[in-house]
Length: 595
Image (cartoon, rainbow, N blue to C red; front, side, top):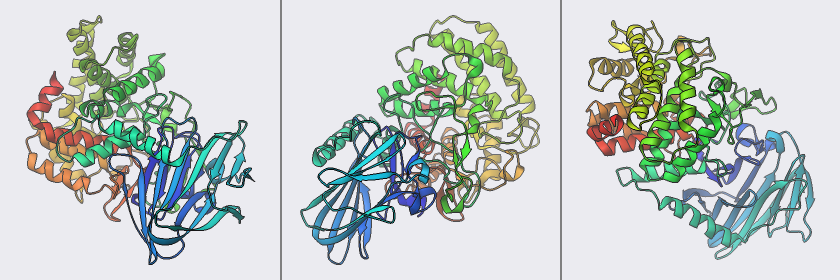
């Protein structure tokens, strides 16, 4: 099934992906980064799935109920129609997933097939029937999953199956609940009360949105995605709901994105603050502070949902991969890389939080000073760059620009908020970085900044130069950089991250277009006064959202398909940011960034 055929439901503890065919093919327990108990997304039905669908031929369409994360799939058959209402209950004591089969007219003969496979599809659980016969309990190791339903579920080929008829006005509820295997069975909620509570939860969130600009539907859906990908307990936001969905179909660029990246910090903060979600922005800022606390020399580029540092990468050999894209990876070795740009992202995020009046974090300025002192000793080292190269370290131009941002924001905070620090020393370092970038990161032959010092290749991150205030959008060198990105990286209407043929990342060439990069070009166009081009490009981009408004990491223009992990927080953050840029216009955004 195509990636865009899936929709997400979630409870801010974990999430599930449900297909147009009524099959849930991905669910991790007990949280976003836990082992999947439905892993058909990365293998096949034998690796776990939960299907509910008509027995015969049918046509389906779906939508979220208003501005919620309640998914409604309507199946039409020759004898009638039913709605499959899928949702997860926020603020529940246990992960609880409900699937309500609601008769709309006539009658429909339905089929369900439940194949629970713990440990990413490897482990067949021990299944016992519940007292009273209304469902079963599946246990393996630390986990138990209880499924309750008012239909008779029978065992067949290591699956639980049932056939049942639903008539107009009738609702058949299925309830999945998770708990630790050593505790009593979790209690099932009343289905209609759970539906009402879930709808109220999402309506309460959506009603706080203050964005009233153009493309409101796409922005609102993106904000709901960000909320759904945030951890209720900690405020951390995972980059995506999945692991190992390929950046190139059949290729090996398959990574685990169920973690929290520091480089997402600033744009995420802007998206949340700009839409009026101050509490969520504060929770994200506080997660950031807790995660990076400690020695500045030990800061990582990403962390677990609760700030975990150990994200060891391994392969899952029994899964065949999405469309045979191998390997399937769990964990992410990039956590141990040196990526200098994250220091700038952290400082920018904390600067903007302070500027927008978020309450001060305990010892926040002391922590920033320690980070600045450490960065002063390493900014001139080569690193792996923003794109987490698996090749050798390089002097990436954008990494150095973000080091400039780090010291620039420290200087601004110290002077504007009367905070103590070696400001004169920071000014010297900031100028030293600026001079080196201008000397080694700018090609006079191309009239453009380049991916690495002394190189000629382009990188989409350079489109962010005017947003960051390194140089104004009207500077000829910025204009030349935009033109060079358009020439080298703009393909089939999309901006590539960089040319993978250059082998700078140490991986075989080939990937889709990273969606955030094209949204960055929208921003750059607005700042450069090219409003009509920006609007046209943005409208092209939001057409890539699937039927329920979700985006993955990348798009394959040749196959005309979404690729990469899904749904991708960074794509939705970039969408919100670009929409706000278009809404505010060049003058307003420039004033906002420079103050």
